[in-house]
View 1 (spheres, rainbow, N blue to C red):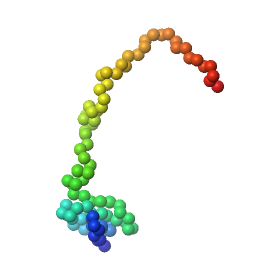
View 2: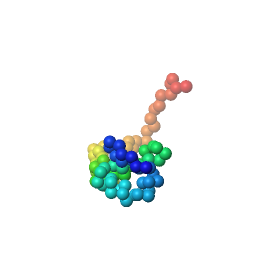
View 3: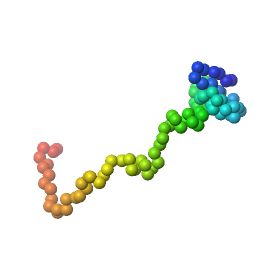
Length: 93
């Protein structure tokens, strides 16, 4: 059974499977199509352009790495002295 709400058409899972082409066409022409199972909303069929707008642009891995902080200004040198550090164990139980 298909029902129409203010924001989208709802399809029972079995009917959505049987009429999948129609569900996809309605998503393109009319907007989101909600699929229900046992009366609960479980999935939404969206037009691809609407999905892309919701998802937003995702950087690829290279862009992600290059967008990080500039590490060239960090001082990563290590103290090379062999002297032992003194540790105060007073008050440690």
